[in-house]
Length: 363
Image 1: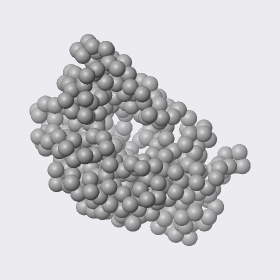
Image 2 (image 1 turned 60 degrees about the vertical axis):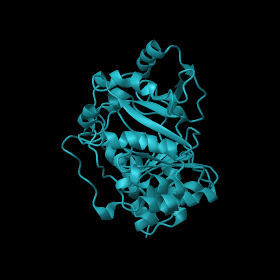
Image 3 (image 1 turned 120 degrees about the horizontal axis):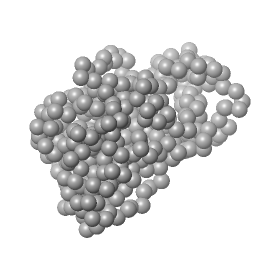
Image 4 (image 1 turned 45 degrees about the vertical axis):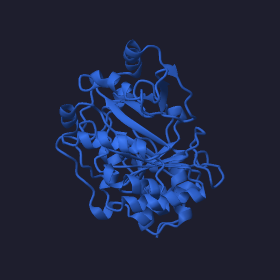
């Protein structure tokens, strides 16, 4: 049985960085009420991203190595009851926003069941339940997802050109993704966002065309700076800083209107005056937002990752399957979050640090 002592559990569950498994001194133990999910820099965490699967029906160049990745065996992936149990604990710790990711979350056979179970957590304080999807399977499930409790939808699309889509995704399906965006807008979600990873010499010439989509559509187009992950052959030469994109957009559309960002937003929001939608820039590389980070990630195999770019993970799956009580797991989560670093190491260091491929982490 996993014992209740946090230091003991932390040492057993810690992955990748054994040095961090030293006993927690009184100076590092969180002295907080049991419902808090806070780190040593006083950042409150109320946003949980849950990866439902490592599998995907696309092979995007920035997410998966060309040779593919080794997937975890099926019995290593969290079951639906395990996901729901952990989500309940996170909500009890103050999480108000959950986003389901992958891989591609909709390739998981019981994805709708997961959405329905998590949607019920709105009675316990959950305010937002979103999903990030590549859109290929969305047409089959969009009405059911909406009725099951999904409130927000992000659709990944990196190009508006069919041949280029197939080059980036290494698969077909452009028309289905484009159609999924229109269907999502008509379905009544609280927000529909399009995520576009911008890569110099690949798709950066289309940024203006994406902005034009917001003229008659209540879309939020988010331009994401190219980030380094295991196997994606990241290069600084492919990174387009958001300030450069902003300048290009204003050359075409005129001065943009700066919008008010919500607390802990990852995106810097703008709009073209008179357009129905808006755009945003996720500037993880050129101007990080670590100081206001409120997010933690639960990977498909049950690993808790408190920083997207950190390589330390805690296996909540192993704790659960080892017999840990809810109080044990709560303490383990709090201890992991408490140890979260002030900021990531910077793009040059991150490019050489070991980390999982994005498909393993969850988009």
